[in-house]
Length: 438
Image (cartoon, rainbow, N blue to C red; front, side, top):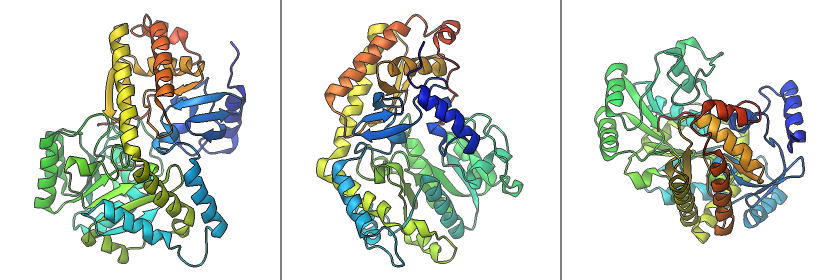
């Protein structure tokens, strides 16, 4: 069979020879989608469409820029503001005033917070938040739940046990280069599991908790209540990681809807609609520690990120974007529930309304890879973690669901048969990907 993504796959092979790791983001590697049959590179992206190197025009239902482009690709109104900012100069010896305006906007949306600091990526935001929390707390050990980036502080959990990150990041993740003296400083707990959290806090002199507020399931009330109480009682700094969840289901942080009471919250991805910007917001007692520890970077002052975030949020307010994201996500969830019922398939539908998660049964990696490959033939980029965008409309979502129904109908006889699934695949299945506790 002719590979319609030949140019993209050939470029990926060559890229691995001169780019360490092949690319900059794990989630964009073809190995995490469909190793031998994936476009990999794009020439142009607009709305929800992507033009690849082979001339294919694809409808993106495979997470829209790893959940960053809630307005859609190359949004006209946002791009006009970006172009104006570039024309005025994106860097100078002085600070751009948009930095202050963006800080004001974040504090307006989060009444509990007093100060803001900005960076350019989610990983940087996590590192800054942890540094500030450790600077404030007399206890430096960290309890964590969820995915928080690639930095040493996080990966050091696997120094205690090679399996500590297996359910939070990747099974068997490699941590070469992480200093051994970080051992016994970072400890995982399970989402919605009070017993595991209590055990970690009791045995490890915890001063900081960092967690994602929501992934596949909502935190239960007892879990939230205990976290708020124990943090207050033991003077533990609570960091809520909203890099993925923030500004999807609501304007601001998901924690605002869940009654979680953080000392710090961190944002990225959606706040800039794909332009590099991240934010750390928090209470005075912690944020003022930025004056007592060295946290500084030239490119954090670059103008485009501030302008992108400021105007992304303004457009979200103007068009009530989150209402659309939720509505589209509910249509997708209900669509897959109907597919599951109609075809008698054991599909598991979960996730935030704006970011559905679709489980493909017993052999999820095999089945979801085959689903991806068959959807590509229909010119859809599709996986098991779609993320909605304001650029969608009901017509394209219905087409996506119709194609999904057709594909899964053809897969129905193979879904529960590992041998048949492997036989139907083009090449090997995708790697197991991000396994999260929540």
